[in-house]
Image (cartoon, rainbow, N blue to C red; front, side, top):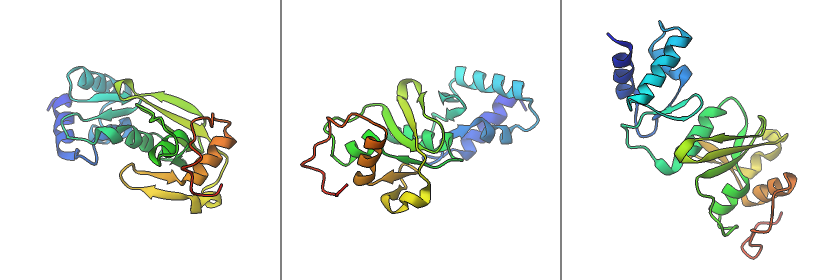
Length: 182
């Protein structure tokens, strides 16, 4: 069977609304006989033919599944840095809590044990990872797991501390809305 057919059949069987993002490593398991170069060529062909959509480097969306478009960046961030400590914070957490008036469109901000970086995700937007030296046990009480996003989320108090620690602009914060002491 042709590799492209094998890939599309496997994607059809594996994909669901909750699992529609795949890494190159995930797809390597479907076609273990291919060399790395052949796999990259196959993935490029699959994108060109519309079987996959490239979200960002190493992350692919199976577009034939009805996915949660508004959560795609969060799910991609969770997949990109699955081996590190990451949590939704800064402007994203504060906007979601109604503490800042502006809603970031097509951009999410996360604190990460990895290096700071902005990952462009084409028409979906961008993911901004901001490095933190904090360990999970230091702020565990300030985090809640957000199952919809597949990521930890900072409380308002922690997000405000992260804003101060990273010297982000605090002008948009509506202090009359902030209920938690910082």
